[in-house]
Amino acid sequence: MDGRAAGRLILKGKVLSFTRRPTGVGDAGSYRYHPQGIVVIDGGVVTAVADAGAIDAHRTAGAVVEDHGDRLILPGLIDTHIHFPQTQVISSYGTQLLEWLAKYTFPAEMRYADPAFAAEKARFFLDELLRNGTTTAVVFGSSHLGAAEAFFAESERRNTLMVAGKTMMDRNAPDGLCDTAESGYRDTTALIRAWHRRGRQRVAVTPRFAITSSPAQMEAAGALAAENPDCLIQTHMSENRKEVAYAAELYPDRAGYLDVYDHYGLLGPRTLLGHSIHLRDDEIARMSEAEAVAVFCPTSNLFIGSGLFDHDRLERGEHPVRIGLATDVGGGTSYSMLRTAGEAYKVMQLRGQTLSALQAFDQMTRANAAAIGEEAAVGRIEPGLTADLVVLDARATPAMAHRMEAVDGDLEEELFVLMTMGDDRAVAATYVAGARVGG
Ligand code: GUN
Ligand code: ZN
Image 1 (spheres, protein in one colour):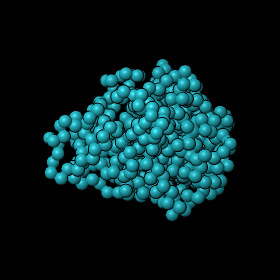
Image 2 (cartoon, rainbow, N blue to C red):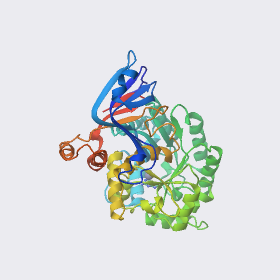
Image 3 (spheres, rainbow, N blue to C red):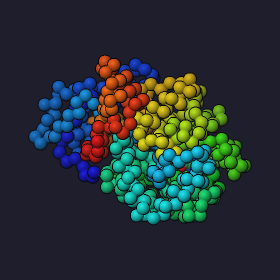
Image 4 (cartoon, rainbow, N blue to C red):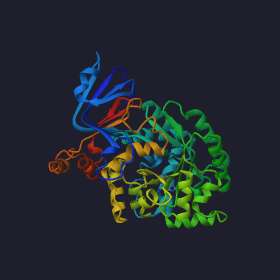
């Protein structure tokens, strides 16, 4: 699984990469597409993208050519919100957020106090992401420093670009899972010193949410954010109505849920706000002004019964808000960003909105990279960017192949089949910095 490609690698296939947000169906100016294309990779970096007819000009002595035929070569998919200690929480029956946390999630996360257990689960977690074509993720850890260290060690071994945090939580959870304002600060600082920007690893300041962080801990998280302006900040907000009411009760002096984070200096262009469903107009205006990111987690929002994310109110309203798309495993029910996009489409249908295939694939790649400030490194297939890539097969299952018989070479239809019917079975190969890691 590890190792970097040394010599030149040339991939052949249908090469697709977005250059800007698509306005909707048919926006051919939003992407570059080579129906018979090549991606040239040297030392893990893309050095050229061209039509396959030009391959001889790029075929140096010793170059390896991998032909993916009729399959699509895309930038590796990016998941902007997922929980590393919830691989055995996924598919937990019958509760909504606060009960779900207490009954299933907190007990499961307590086991990550053991770094050896955490290391084993980190291997599974990263295997599963890569199998699903996800090459970068923004990851909540457990509250244990050792588990976060084990996660980064495993990610470094695979050379994946991962953003992760030790979750800060000092109340309303079992003792074995709670840190304190001081230890949360100390452990996060230690994690940042050891791992932030070590190779491709990135540390995020990670207060779990207002309910499990005391005012003292929020202040400590604000201090971490101020001292480390280069780090992302990730948390949860306005996911569930009972949660919103409880947050207001716990922070009676604040104007609302968003204002808790704002007050403690946690709101800015590097802030990812998971869920962001039950928002007031003034909160949307403030998120827009702060350039914070609302993270849409459709499978989780449906499974835990949280609500319908109002995508177009955020993206196209008077005060536009940046958006990320994410699985939120283990509240979410699939590691697959294809499944996630398919469910996002359905949630938007229920709100009378629509998500074109172009928008969905741009979101999973370029736009999610922009949401996490990594657009110069990943999310597109362009010279100078890291060769994190996924190869997708729209004919991966009998039902998909049968459906594709009715598609006459139309790119958008093929993409829509992939996001509606595809999952890990549609991932033919995944490359991390030019090294094939699965599929
Ligand atoms: N809010 C606080 N913690 C969590 C979590 O682990 N999952 C989800 N979906 N929401 C949360
Ligand atoms: Zn979450």
